[in-house]
Length: 251
Image (cartoon, rainbow, N blue to C red; front, side):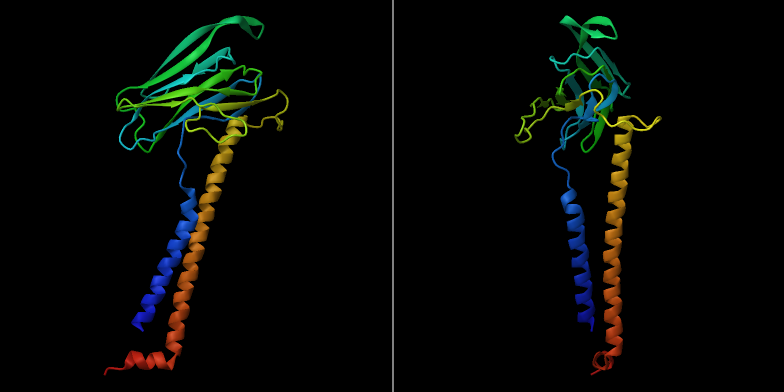
């Protein structure tokens, strides 16, 4: 009888282990890289974006991020938001001919933005940091490629500079890419609808919550099946006179 209980317990453990592997095994994140969020916007618009920087080192922290704005797609206005513990430096370049922004000609545009950590603000292993910017008006191009350099505390530098290849595989060190659509092609919502980036954030939060609830429900359901199996086995044992005889035998 004890052997029977141990068998049921082992089966229950294996069942829960299999479910955990099935549910969580595929969710292991792929190799992360510097990216821009949101990754889509409309030509001519102004928008708030964030460069997301994960730390992929097990021993070193990220201490500096350099973002290079594309030379073939100048932006008239670039603003940065304060990031606690980080200093920011903006480098300009001259463009000829000047770009036209709201009727004014602009010859100096931002070429590079550098964030540098001070004190304990560096991005530690297993964490990430976002660096917000305001960009606009967005140029009339299909995409903007922001090449990035990520510097670690041990002196290592990761060059996220590979441009996407249409129809090809993702490069080993892809640069952040902002896809731009023609003005007026975006779906218009009702008056007072949240900005596209806010909608994207809400969708991400909602998706994460839905996945979490789904996983919790699945695990709880399997747990219920296992408990039900244990209860059924116990009922069957109590009702079986052979089992009962074995249980009361003292010789």
